[in-house]
Length: 321
Image (cartoon, rainbow, N blue to C red; front, side):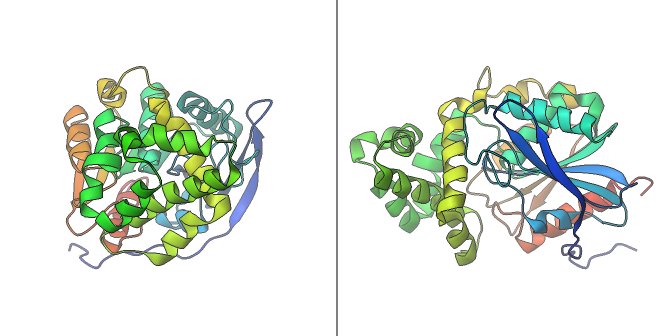
C-alpha cells in the first residue's frame, strides 16, 4: 500500500566524526560524518555558492542506514579562511570533493544537492561518474546567462516587486542592465559601508524570493553580516565568472556522462530563483532520471512538500530498498 503521509525531516543527529581537510596552501575544508559509520555513504552538497551546511541538512537521510557526510565548500561555513575567494572555483570544489572521498575511504557515494548544490553535484558526477552511486538534485541551477537575467533583472523582480525595489535601489538605473557586475563592483569596493550594504542586500534578495510563503527567519539569517560576507561575496565571485564553466550550458552539454547514474530531480513548480524549465531541460538531457514536480512549492528545500519529496528520494535509494 502506498504511503501518502507527508514525510518530515528525520530526528536530529550529532556527528560521530568531524575535522578539516587541507586542500591547498590557503584552504582547509570542514567536514563531518553522522548516522551509521558502516552505512551507505551520502554526501550533502550545500548551495550558494558560499552558503555552508546546517545541522538540519543531516536530517534528509535515515541515520540508521546512511553514513551522512557534509562539508563546507571553500570559504563557506566553518571552512577556513572565511569568505576567501582566492583559489576558489567550481573545479577547485570538484577536486576537493574527490579528495574528500579518498580521504574518507569511500568507494561510491550518493550525492544530494539543491540550487548551487545541484550544479556542483552534477558537475562532479560528470567529471567522476564512477564515484557516484546515485544523484538527488533539487531546484536545478544550470548557470546559464538566461537564468541570471531572469532572476536578477527580467523575471523574478516582476513577481517579488517590493523586494526588487530594495534590491535594485542600491544600484543606479544606468547600471541595472547587469546587476551581477554592479553588485560585484560594490562588494569589492574599498568603501566598507557600501560593501556591507551590498553584501546584505544581495543575500537578502535570495532569502526574500526562495519560498512561496515569505520566511522572516531566513531573511534575518541571510542578512546577518558574517553569513552575507561569505554567501554574497562568493556567489558574486562565481557569477561574475559565469561559474568558471567553459561554455554556457556546459552541464547540459555533458549530461550524457550521467547515463549510468540513477537519479531524482525535484523541482518546485513556482521556483522563482531557478525556473522550472531548468528541471525539464535536465530531464531531457538525462532521460534516466525521474522528475518530481512539487506543485505547491518555490525554491527552498524546507517547504513541506519539497522536504517530503526529498526524503522519499533518499529512502528510495537505500541499498536494497
